[in-house]
Length: 93
Image 1 (cartoon, one colour):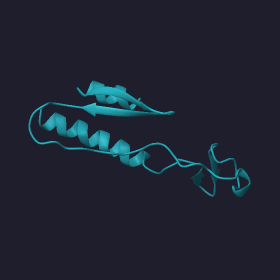
Image 2 (cartoon, one colour; image 1 turned 60 degrees about the horizontal axis):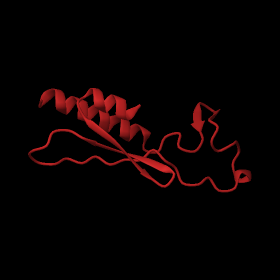
Image 3 (cartoon, helix red, strand yellow; image 1 turned 180 degrees about the horizontal axis):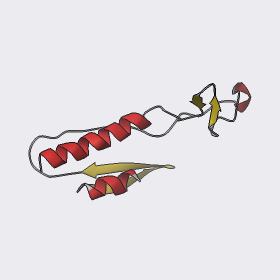
Image 4 (cartoon, rainbow, N blue to C red; image 1 turned 90 degrees about the horizontal axis):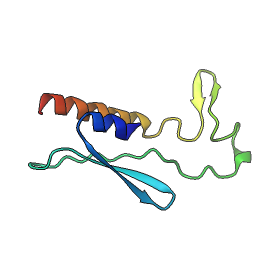
């Protein structure tokens, strides 16, 4: 999903597998200063499931809040980076 969106903005996207994880390397342009954004969408192991009030990888809503492994973490930051990159490219083609 992220690679497709960045590709529509003119990025060259490459999947870089590393063990069981697949990383995304996206580049745009080729000359001038370099700007790097780095984020992640993975999570650390959940530990014993018995320590959780609900299954760690199934979203649970309680008291108006969303609980579960990876429910937030860097997701908002990665989305903000993507929108910022798209905006920058529109302003500086």
